[in-house]
Image 1 (cartoon, helix red, strand yellow):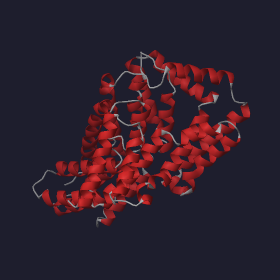
Image 2 (tube, one colour):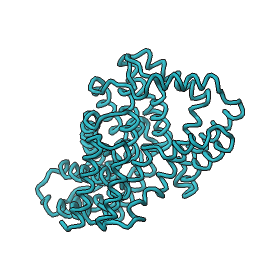
Image 3 (cartoon, helix red, strand yellow):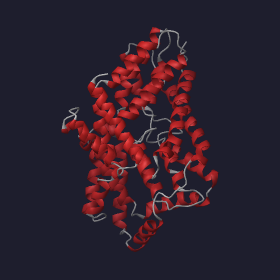
Image 4 (cartoon, helix red, strand yellow):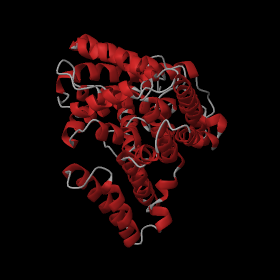
Length: 427
C-alpha cells in the first residue's frame, strides 16, 4: 500500500469511528474528514468539498425543502393518517402490511429511487411515538424496503449496466430482461424475509419529541394553507418526484427541478426563508455531501483497484462458482458502501468477475448480474444517502443500526448470488 492509500484509509476509519462514538454532532465527522483530506494533501479544497456541488446532493437538498412544504398540506395529513391507523392498530400484521405496501410502491420508480425513499422516510418521521408500534421499528425496514420493488418491472438501469459490462468483457451471448427481473424479485423476497424476522430485534425509542409533534399539529390546525397553495404545493411535489424519476431522460435538469420547486414555494410564502435554509442545510445533507470527498480520495488513491487485483490473483482455479460470485458481490457492495460510488465499484469489479468466470470455463452472466445488482445493495454503513438518512432520522445508535443492517446485507447478497445462479446457470 502506498502512503496515499494508508492516509485515505486512515481518514475513512477516523470518520467512521467518530460516527460510532457520537462524540460529534451528526453530519460533522464527514466535514472534519474533508478538512483532513486537504491538510494531508490527498485532495484539493475543490476535490474534498466536491460533494457540496454534487448533483445528487443538490437534488436531495432541494427536495427536502419541497417535502417540508408538503408536510403542511392536508394531503400529507391523510396519508399519515392511513399509516397512523396501521401504527395505532399495532402488531406484527400491521408491520408486515406496511412493509409490503412500501415494497409495492417501490415498483413504479424502481430500486433506490431518491424521491421515493426521501418521501417514505419523511412520512415515518412525522408519525408520533406509539408503544404499539414505535416508529423506530419502522424507519430502518421501511427505508430499506424502498430499494426492493416487489414487482420489479422497472430494471432498465441495472439491466443496461449489466449488458454493458458483459459486452465490454467480450461476452455477446445476450441477456433476458425478464430473467433479470426475476433475480431482483428473489432478492426482494430475501429482504422481506429478513425484515419479517428482524421485527423483534428493532429498537424501541421515539424519533421525535411528542411535545414537538403536538406543536406541529397545533400549527397545522391554526395555520392551514389556502386551497390554492395546497394544490400548487402538491403539484410541485409531483413534478419534483417525476423529474427525479426521469433522470435518464431529462439529464442535468432533473437535478435542479426540486430546487426550482422549492424557490416557487418560498416565493408563495408556503415556507419562510429560515425553514427553507434549515431543510437545505439539514445534518443529513452535510453527511451526504461530506462523504463524497472521502469516497473520491479513497478511489483516487488506487486502494479500490489494488483490492480487485489482489483478489483476482489469489482466487486460483479450484474455486466453487458460487463462492467466486459471492466474493465479487461482497467486494463490489462493500466498495460501493464505503466509497459511495455504486457505478464506479461495479465497473471495477464486474469486468474482473466476468473475466475470471470466462477463464474458468463458466457462463459469466450470473456473475455479471450478481455483481451489478450488489453495487446497490450494500448499505450496512451509514455513509451513503439512504443509510445516512435512516440513521439520522431514526435516531439510531450505530450498534442498533448494525443489528439490522449487517444481517440484512449478508442475507441479501447470499440470496442475490443464489438467485443469479438459479436463473442463469454457470455451466
